[in-house]
Image 1 (cartoon, rainbow, N blue to C red):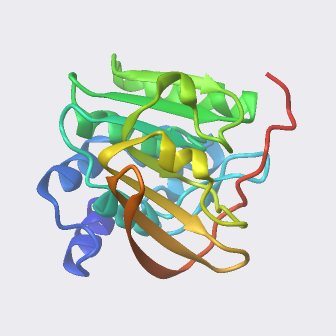
Image 2: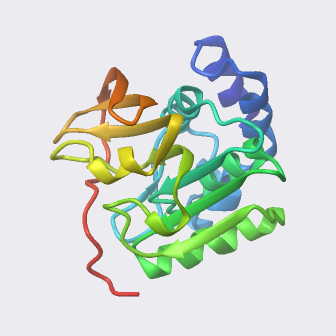
Image 3: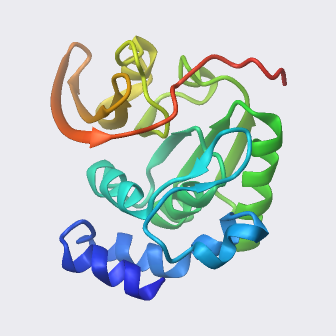
Length: 210
C-alpha cells in the first residue's frame, strides 16, 4: 500500500501532508471483504456486496484533496459503504470534529460501522438511512462528500445543509460523470469547479428499509 500511496504523491494526486498521513494510518485492507483484502494495494475499486464498491484509491485521493477536511470540521459522508473514506475523514477532522456517515443499505451500514470500529474513533456517527436529500437532523455541515452520482443534478438540500464557506464534493451526471466541487459563498452564491472522467453508482432513494 505504501508504494501505491507514493505513486499517488508522485503523480500529484496526493499532496496535503495530513491527507497523506491519513492514507498511511488507515489501512484499506481493514475495510475489504476477506477474499479481496490481498488486493488492497491495487489502484482499483473492489466489490463489497450489493453492487457497491470500496472506491479506487485514486478517486478517494482526488475527492479528499478537493474537500480539504480541517480539524474540527463536521462532515456528512454520503454513501459510506465500507467505511474506509469515513475512517479517513474521522482521522482528518480530529477529536473536535465529527463525521456523520450515512448509508442506505442496512447490511453495508453495519459492515462500515464494524470496520471503522477497529480504529476506536469517538467522532463518527453512523446513520442507516436514505441520503438523497442529505441529512437535515445533523445539519449544517462544514463539508459534504458524496460517493454516488447525482444523475439529475445536485440535490438542492445538500446546498441548503452546507454552512457558509462550506464545501461539497459530488459526482454529477450519467454514465461518465464530472466530479463537482461547490463552495458556498453565501446563501445564494456558490462557486463551482468540475473535474471530468469519473464513474460512480447512482445516488438513489432507499429501497431496503431501515
